[in-house]
Image (cartoon, rainbow, N blue to C red; front, side, top):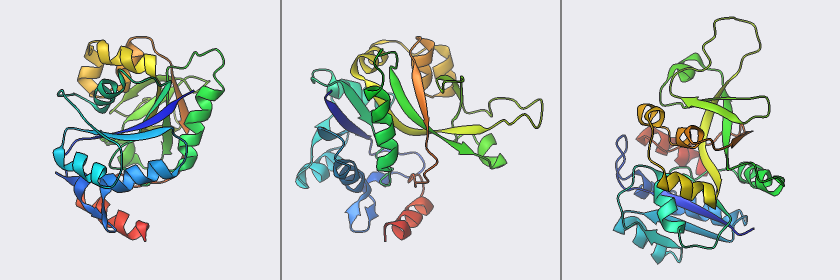
Amino acid sequence: MKIIAMIPARYAASRFPGKLMQDLAGKPVILRTYETAVNTNLFDDVFVVTDSDTIYKTIANAGGNAIMSTKEHECGSDRIAEAVEDMDVDIVFNIQGDEPFTPKEGLEELLAVFKNDVAKEIDLATIMAEITDEEDIKNPNFVKVVCDNRNFALYFSRSPIPYQREKDVGLKYYEHKGVYAFRKDALMDFYKLPMLPLEASEKIECIRYLEYGKKIKMIVDNTSGIEIDTPEDLERAQKKWK
């Protein structure tokens, strides 16, 4: 299998504009994320795909692989799909540009999903982590996921799911983390299929796969990282990088 990693990188960000170009221990956040992905040695190639000349030049000037998007996109999966449409690849990883601490262990687990999927029933794999704080469970910025007994995703929501009518039944809540691995065919289907009402309502791109009958395998990884969404997150990242 040919396996690549794509890092979608928009310059604009509603909560922290230009966050990917903020300094993290002497280098921009996006370059730190790119170098982290390369240094895992898990991928045949790693690319940053962006709508920003600034980000493109930052990666290219550092000797990295960068691709400029030619279209406007609703989400990172669409941006990646445009970039890989004519590439001869089997598995495409989507690594978030604002997560420079993405752990190698979680990426290895996602890769193992496809290596062990002899029947090729899995269209994409992604990560979830248990959450226990009640405020996090209620927070719509934490995307929750529920699964069947084989850890295939049933649904994603910004609402607390499932609703806990009965207590003391061993219920756990899981947050969806933003690292994916797709079969290329599934990614291209996503790119060509229209958004349906559930995805449009929740603004969660994984829902489109479920609405069209795709199989999403969830991997539990409780490794803590830092997603840089606010200046405060960047401060925590500076301390952790040291």
